[in-house]
Image 1 (cartoon, rainbow, N blue to C red):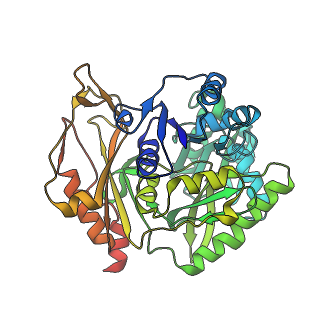
Image 2: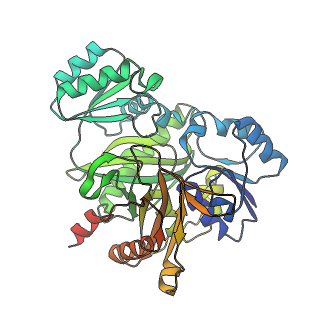
Length: 426
């Protein structure tokens, strides 16, 4: 089959990397892809969603996989389905779970899914009154998409009120902050659980843990993610069962009963408080960098996972994962996340150890090629170095060995990815 992958980051590269090793896949297209995805397939520069669907139709694309949230929220799935094309991801209506935090929180409440106490409001007076009734810290969220930056954890009530004013005035996030969510802060440990859904059935993938902060020890500003690992020992069978029974099943049943069945990736941001899962948020696509580890752990054809979901046939799927761990370390550019960085040539040393060759890979993200074909780091999160192992420690060590093989000016990364799991094991 021929596959089209929509997106340009490490998440999309890792999906392409998995499909490249799938004997069911003939050709891979990326729209738009990045400077390294053309090593896996063909990059195409079509931004208009209608024109992209026409391309898929004209080129007999058998399956389209959507990576990022923006095209999903903008209705790419509806556009492709209207043209009779098979596409992996939720419809525009179902993508509101990520596109609108107000929609998502109200859905959690309606379907009886455990979440933090909250209000939705567009009134600073109402926001102030609610904030003054709460204990600190306090979480303030813009309603719309803000590229992962629309959540403020305010340490004081005054800070929460100022954050609310900034959002509601449009100063902070424009129209995305026309409505806001104010909610209680949950104190526990955070997990990423992904369920692949087809409207009725679902498959739960190994739980992952992301590392959002820029610096070791979870210090510094929030980022898009500086590394992740999966599966995490912080999730036991009891937590998985509670998430399935209290979260996934009522959500899928509720959405279906509301006439918006959910297909694609349900990304569940979980906070575990005293062994009880509370839902922080839903996203409607794979996390990045969690996807890079999950694709490395997949032990059945990647095409089956995506195609069975897109065609409503997960009940017949036979999805397997390796009995291993994966750790991914993000290499970021010099000025990330504060600003842009000068392009820098990337040099990857030849890997001579078979052990490292067989148990690591690089998922490229913020890269381009110059006119001579040299790979350049072009800013942001440049790549994810992924290591596999029979233990978290072995996978972590291999990932960092691979990090040592990569060189570019300004390279930076965290050196403590998976520390919470390793601390637990110690």
